[in-house]
Amino acid sequence: MPRIVPIKELRNTNEISRICHAKDEPVFVTKQGYGDLVVMSVEAYDKLVGIADTDDAITASEAELAAGCEVREAGAALSELRRKQRL
Figure 1: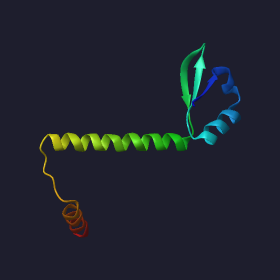
Figure 2: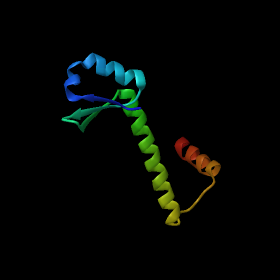
Figure 3: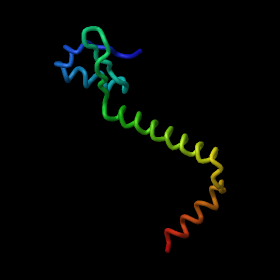
Figure 4: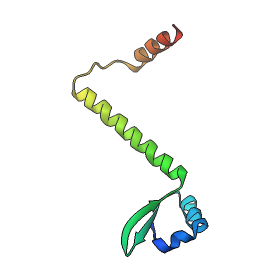
């Protein structure tokens, strides 16, 4: 269940930091009862960005396939890259 705190609790930075690191998930900050900010640990942020980057790469690959790009066997493609790297 997500942790929701009012904005006045941001004064207690050590406690917010502890919560973010303990659960490895974001803390939602409200202002006058409405969502205003999201605070998370660097580790949780990096994980989230990594997932988004992977999703973007998969979407781009699927779009290339739909456009009719050349499909090659992975082993052959890697062998060619290794040969090019040695040159």
